[in-house]
Image (cartoon, rainbow, N blue to C red):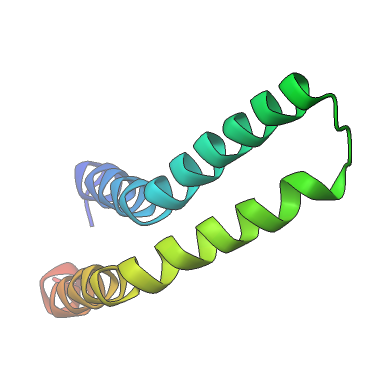
Length: 89
């Protein structure tokens, strides 16, 4: 196992994590910003008001993206496990 392979594997892993977590984080950011603007405009400062819309939005994105995410993780794992024989030499 060369240092270049380890670096490439680390890069591929981080890219996969960003692809899988990115959409949920972006949705949570947008919903949080929208709720914060709503709170500022209406002067309602209820702390629990932010959490419910965020949870619902992230759960919706998670349920929509789950098949794609699982497919990406399975493909990455299969590629990783299939490269084990080449690493032994």
